[in-house]
Image 1 (spheres, rainbow over the protein chains, first blue to last red):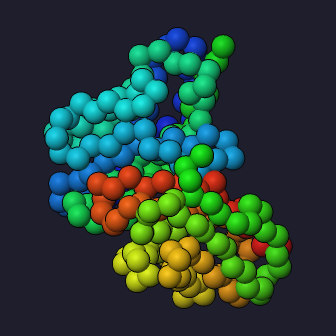
Image 2: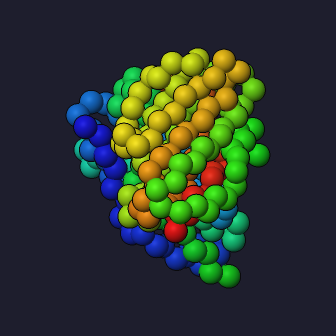
Length: 113
Length: 114
């Protein structure tokens, strides 16, 4: 079975500060891992995905995530927060070959000017 | 704009009623997924169709059903509605099934059951 745990339902950072959103996964098989972003009143948009190639994955809007098997983590980072990054972020996992995604509970990011 | 359209945007109905949510996938996408987002359950996968056939099933209640039509649009039918069915229902589509295929999400249908 697969699942993800997102630590911190709310994270606040100052504009220009480092963004770190935490995600730990549980999977009985090598996982595929994803980060999605949801802006207010919109659907989800894929930020990046890990598919067992490079462990450091770069995504859109300056975000990146590092797959750490020893820590079962896939934390999302961005060096410098922008006001437009304020949104809800979801980590998701899919077992190798499976069709559907299992989402975490989400982390709401607030960027303080 | 992901290219996935969902109608209606908002739906308000009463307990015991039946509603139909509609999804049109991106042009060229053959696979459609339905998800439910609620405050207590989070974002949950309901069901997936590929080229008209059911492909995978998640936490979908027996009161809910879905289908994908020959023109590839999909409908999610919710019946005997309960207060707890109030949620945001998302449709997503991908070219073909598979975890590596990016799923493009629609804007969602917000269902309120009174």
